Image (cartoon, rainbow, N blue to C red; front, top):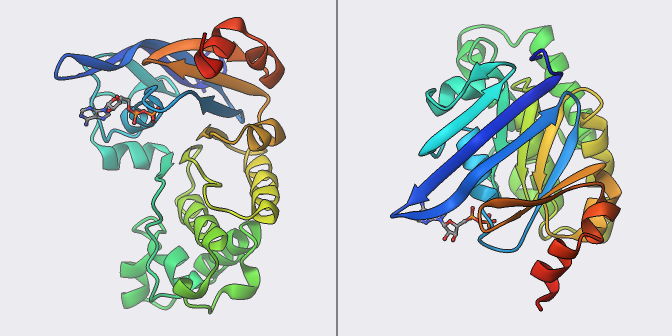
Length: 247
Ligand code: ADP
């Protein structure tokens, strides 16, 4: 933790693509064990912000500190090792492998597939996999081929693959896209449970879902911070109403 109690501090962050500022002088902080939702119209810079936090896109200027460590100069794999996990919108699970195998290959090197090829799978690894499977509601599906899971279960598996890496900050891009109402409710519970021990930054469009999980929302517009506060506060902010409803 940084002295401020924030796990993540973004300051004056800017990135330009051919002169166009996708993120423009943005500053925000995420607390330990906070579940923050980022909303904003298409093109607001939400995905680009997460891309910069996880190191996929390098900022033009500004700073991103994770537990006081500057991330902007680090390659993606080192940012993962520091404890930042990113889930993209498109699932990247291995459909021919079982749920257990998918969780196992995403373990950090020391425990993962390479170790399991040369050594017997340890009790410790088994426990991690079983605990994560329990958390993502797939404990009964450990031997199921991932391709056979429902769309929602695949999304949970992917969150599980992040959890096995033991991150302290999870970045999720529209985690309930395409899910059934029941799966959305279950995902809300899952994210709230994860937030008991970790920080999350979640991009989301569905305001009902946002209401069910967030205590604080950040609204981006044209790369800038438009509003920040509780769901009620931002929904009643005239600047937000103008952007969403037009003039
Ligand atoms: P959001 O996730 O809020 O919909 P994005 O972060 O995806 O918005 O995009 C913000 C803006 O930056 C968009 O106008 C998009 O076209 C632009 N953009 C994002 N990535 C690139 C890139 N690699 N090259 C050029 N323009 C980009």
